[in-house]
Image (cartoon, rainbow, N blue to C red; front, top):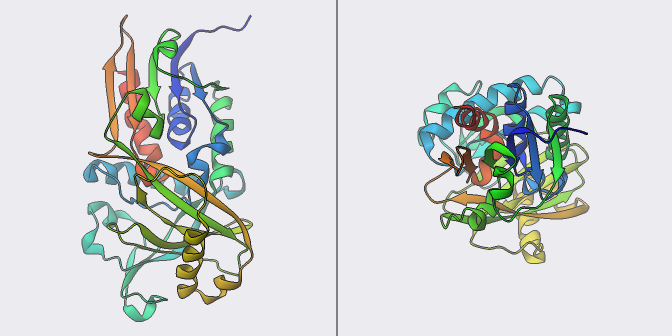
Length: 321
């Protein structure tokens, strides 16, 4: 009979949960992931997934986590077909270096552009070659890497952490938006993101124009077999059904930058709820009855992919401490 002894149970199978589970398993711990959904059905699977510290706090810690993750993605990009990670050039419109944190000075090749170098109705911007992650491929690769390290992935819904705590000395809460009810944490708020997938009309660079104070963003990411168009950042909106008017507006905004997008055949629509949290990411250990430990690790908003590896190391330190 297979042993049911665990050192750690990670609750949540999105990019934060899987990256944390990989980090723990590769430290030699016996780790299980309990996930309500298959990895390709999580919120993470919907992400456009360009590395960039977008709408995430606390700023200083997030910058360090992002840079740590950038180093890992740089290594993973050596095998893009397996890992889903590629280096892709592109432009952040209406973004200036002075408005970014100290982390920006450590991004190789990040440079200013003049207004004439930025397409569409935008002023100056920044250019860079950054990791762009094909999330369905990357999530499946993370699960395979986790299992190769001895971990076990289980489809399992939870209504609290007591059951996991009865079967492992450490429980890591990577439940994202679900932590609002499970913890509970009233600081969590969903930020709705809607995307449109179209046939790629020949675009090989990414583009973003994202005003942090607006619910509308404009971006497109060339992924294998599709071009991902976005998007929205609608706080407090929990609708999971794509809105046709929103989709049409997304296509129109992207077409103002690259007109050929207007005629691209639509392949599908995606909606995800980013797990944003007032006060920023929570990575904190609290004691459990009987001497165990619960490590909360959620609230990454739309930057979970960007900070995943750096945050996972911090969560692993608390889990092993």
